[in-house]
Image (cartoon, rainbow, N blue to C red):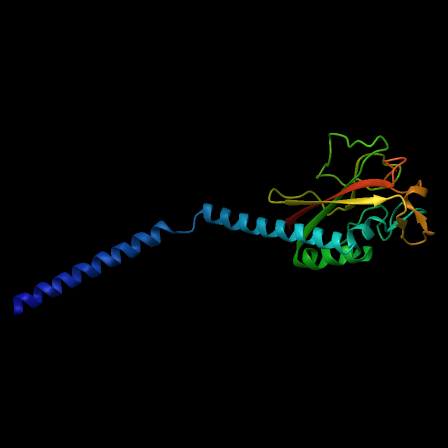
Length: 217
């Protein structure tokens, strides 16, 4: 009986050692590596991209996006509330351009996430030039800066982990410009507006693409 008991004890001890060795091997195999960090970063980027896309979709649906594009002051030749550069650069200024600005502040800026908002529009010939956006620069939407892109909000050069979301807004000829000091003038009748009438003879004034670049500061 004693020999049989000793055998059982030895078997149990051996089994415990095997289980312990298996646990140690598993822990070593799942140690945190640079790949794990990369996977985490990718998850954050995917989440920020989803939030940016949802924000643009919501802002478009409730007309906040169009309202931001129409918040124009023809006297100063830039968006209402921008600084001397004609660009929203201070996070506190962003809230001054309406619901879209408030949405950006609530979803990103108040969380320490930087945002650039680019506006691309069609030229008078109805074409968009091939050079597209220059994400490392801020070019204001003043009428004398003739081109196919400009900055609505510019907070600097994006990092390598920046994500992008876009939304297209159709502006009609009869759309009213609503910025500070602006008389009730339509986009088609305002030659000081940042975008030209790219579809003369059509009720469509211009097709504007809003491009958001989002990254962790």
